[in-house]
Image (tube, rainbow, N blue to C red; front, side, top):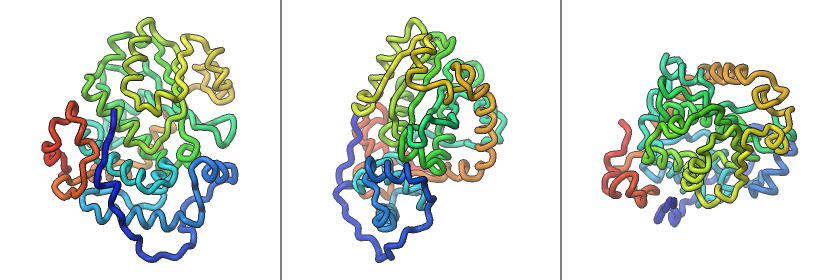
Amino acid sequence: MSVKVDSVTSEVFSAPATDRKMIPIRTIPECLKRKAAEELNEKEGTIAEELTMIKTWMKQSGHIRGRMEDQFLFGFLRSCKHSMEKVKIKLDTYYTIRSVLPEVMRKRDPLDPFVRSVIKMGVTVPLPKTVHPDDPKIILIRGDAFDGDVCDFPDILKVFTMIGDLLLRDDDQMMICGQAAIIDLGHSSSSHLFNFNLSFLRKASILNQQASPLRQKGFHFINTPKSFDLVLNIFKGLMTEKNRKRTIVSHGSSLESLHKYFPPSVLPAELGGELGPVQQYVDEWEQKLIDNRAYLIEEEGLGVDEGKRRTTNPLAEEKDLFGTAGTFRKLEID
């Protein structure tokens, strides 16, 4: 699946004059500094200028209603290995796809009883430890925690993006080292796995790949059902070419196989680990989402105004998802 931007990548904006001092963003450990320099082309002396250029481009674009906080935008720089043209594409795609997914990006109040019930399911659980401080962070996805009688797949994705928004803002290890997903399908049935429509799933795949600044480093499936080959083929079909080249391992029901990649010291008890029950991390993230309620609700007002766009819509060629390019004028958020 391709995401194409034409004129947005050819525009050149000059940044206003700025001093070259490091602006106030979080200090990171030396191991992360080295990794950012070696793998992400990060140069401490150019960060202030790069951030100013991004903010100038966003203001001059006219159609993007986005966050201007340095720490937030720094995540996109790292995700795109400090390529300004890639940052422009990803930011435009990030806000454009969110604007066409109101079922995901609206009503994000973690104190809303229904939203809170979905949070409490604990389908998406970031784990707190890695073997080394510069390893990819571990995200546990618990398929059998998804109760299809209570909510639908877009509701699960809503909570997933709420958690992702906080990781983007707060977790430097995640932004520099990426994330590895452990997808525990538990006792999920085939019908349980297909509790969504394909059109929505394709939108979700854009949201979580081309538009996401959270870089994937691998996918590990555990407790897979008999029908898993079919599921995996669909899963791969929705991946970008880059993600299909990532590590994709099906461990069947073998914890021994999983532990070759993730030792017990970084896993919860349910996966044969030493971190204790996963519920404690579900509870911690429930509270963290509540503590950041204002930030998450504020996201509802961000997106794109297609009536003010002067560049090619990055999703214009996704006609099978959104109709013709002309229908994008319907996408602005009130």
